[in-house]
Length: 267
Length: 267
Image 1 (tube, chains in turn blue, green):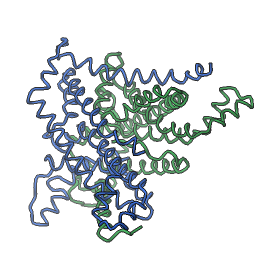
Image 2 (spheres, rainbow over the protein chains, first blue to last red):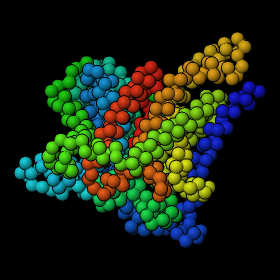
Image 3 (cartoon, each protein chain N blue to C red):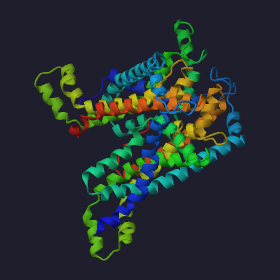
């Protein structure tokens, strides 16, 4: 009898869930079944499997993969070294701090840094390499994205490194393994859960970026996110936009399933 | 534990330098009388003057603050209801379903949230503008508050509630005199997180703002797409200072609330 009155808390919460979690997903699926004139059709899905959209999807995945790989490459050593510093908490806070600054402002800063007469080019000119076109290239897109996502890769890896029992490393050393072997056979396998959640935190947003492609990549790079934004806000073809969104949701679900399986046992 | 070598310290310094370079770069040029981010010609406060004289911009700042404060207040209330509801659900499966549903909006890419809310609001007939932005900010902040409050509730021993009951407290009294004071740190942390998410959000807002209404990040985006203007630099310096104040505030709250360590961080 007590449970009945307690369940009152559920009413506003479930109402919120139905309206803002369940309904939007259903609506996305529903809209993907209509073409631009409002006819019920599967044409959008057929269109998605044409070379134009397939190529866009592939390149979107490729960029997301590159961004994730570079983030991991830079973030892992950073996280590892951070665990060995004095005042760990302070340094960690300093890693988090830039993430609280609006993403657009950081992207905007790179417009100046990578510009034709910006700092990066001045440096290149000084080194004798001459001025290059850096802005609006694949390089600048990947660089800025990695810059933005790096803290989200560092944090989970840092956490899993911190959870690791340090005596395991000592044991590996005592048993005569080299530094590299210790890393390969002990440290890395034990921190895989952190790496996985880091990859999840970078890959999904990297698939759906659209403001950075517009600002930094000058519309050369089209990700799934850019395509969705384009269809919804520019061409007003909501049906096609929703279809791409459906595929993005599916991709997201797959990535979450792939990166989550081991997390439970690691906890 | 072994200390870091010189080389690894250099690596860390480099990572931190790159992490902060764009931010300080923006700040530095906000004092440039030259009007570009290329050469520093002389010190000036003109850009700051321009920010404070631009009434349109000030109205947008005000809008952003109103949306942030209102949405985080409302989502904190809803989120506390949600956390209470989840704790009181005894069936394991229902609980897991609720938690999964709760996390959907946290892991969803912003583009999908934005696009699906755009469909939702158009279908219900809510005019795009203040209301739609406010509603969507509430919608994506609720799960964050739930995540921040939930650990506090779970850590609370049930004997506290039983004791209060035995001493004759009504349900309302148990809630307001025992439970709520106990979870206050979690509530504050949730409120702060919601506040920063709302202030920071661009992608979702961009989809649901419509024509007449704008928030700071949407405005920055449209300004940045037009090219470099040092007013943005001045504005970003001011935002950076406010952010630091917020982070320091948040830091002190979480220090008192050790159990809830920066879990949810935005992409």
